[in-house]
Image (tube, rainbow, N blue to C red):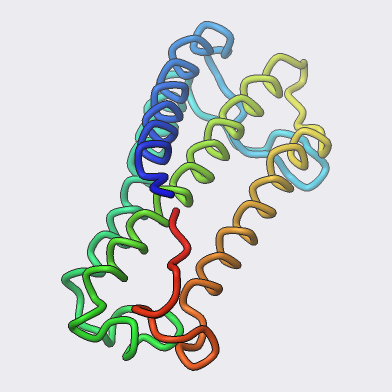
Length: 180
């Protein structure tokens, strides 16, 4: 099953939701925004509202895009710069295009995880700044961190499974590829 349209629609939707959340939350933030919190959840770093929105917007749009771009570049990078299991097999000339396409597609799922996590971080900052003094409850952090880490674990599992030993799973031409 080709999930490319789903992946592209999901990442585009997450980018739109992120940008909309920045605009919608701007008026909810104080002029001086607590942006960093210590282990007890107390604010210990501050930014102006405009600086926070600019920094968060740039980070939220550019970092996931940058990470997906790195995976896209695997089609051009020397084999020695690509770190996947059994890379000599998977990056052989006859499989390199298929491998690069898989890595690029798989990276979109990674970008979705990152975008959702960054959006969650922004809303955590917004909600934390609604309290006086600003405080970040550990529960809020865990509600976005645990699903993000579980998603990364699943993402890594499927990546490892796809690039498993060619001897164990048969040659790429003989097995049905896992598509993302």
